[in-house]
Figure 1 (spheres, rainbow, N blue to C red):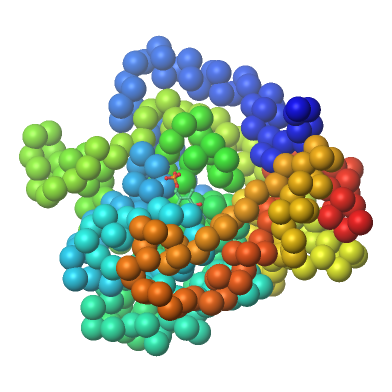
Figure 2 (cartoon, rainbow, N blue to C red):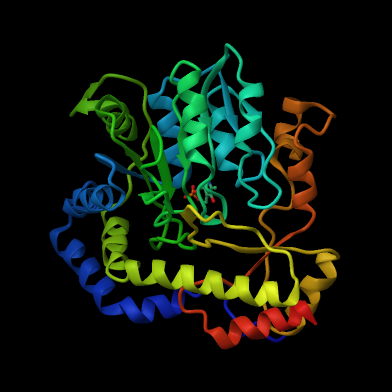
Length: 367
Ligand SMILES: *Cc1c(COP(=O)(O)O)cnc(C)c1O
């Protein structure tokens, strides 16, 4: 079998460009030896808070942990309902169930694949405690509308799952700082990745920030004083150091992602290939570049033969996954998500992708 020549996500080129900075940063940590909660943790938190405009950033062990700790900070538990989208990575809904609460799935917009804000209100009940919209493929959903709905219903907290959207904007504001709480992930393949697991929580609310800080270290307010039940959810100093090194090229990467996404759009439109849409009042990080296709399996094999990797984000909406089937029962509570799941296909996308390779990819799909 010949190996695919084109990378789906090219972390090697990124490392080549940042090798010096990454090695220097790692070396400093190895020398000072503060592997847990070392100075790079605070440095990164300050830089990321400033980047997003949120008052506080709390780094945590992963994007999943960011979502879990956020819900814990809000006191969500058994009997509570949390509104979210079924068309996302499993973590978004998994953390709700882990705390004994129930995810309530709202269907998606067929063109952006983000939660359909116009369908949220009808799902709010006396048990609703929070809304988790996901900035899918790197593009925030209509957060003005979602925040307005939340405030009409007793100031429900809104947690943006921005695991795919760090760097994106919505009406000039940065992802992470668009609602009560923003969560992101530094999983290596995300727009801002480390070399392992990592994540962060953003908020401008003092009490929420303090709760998150305590929750990530076993509910500890100071050494051996445990004010609440927490988790072991810290991000390693080394991983923070790696993100700090990657920040040096991040503005360039953000600009490249937007440019490459727009080039894909133009190529797709020229062939009449239907693609996920972006709204004019926001930017996408194009964490995934996604098109809608028929006969997906056959097309994926054709791409593979041409040395082009592809993926599906996501093949099954969460409400149809065995672990979540009890929530909606046998009826399909989110038919748009089901239709979209059968048709989506993601293509190679990373800041070092060349125009020539993009053209080659789109030519295979369009021919
Ligand atoms: C990747 C991802 C997560 C989980 O992040 P991890 O760091 O892998 O735990 C959560 N939500 C979405 C939408 C994601 O894409």
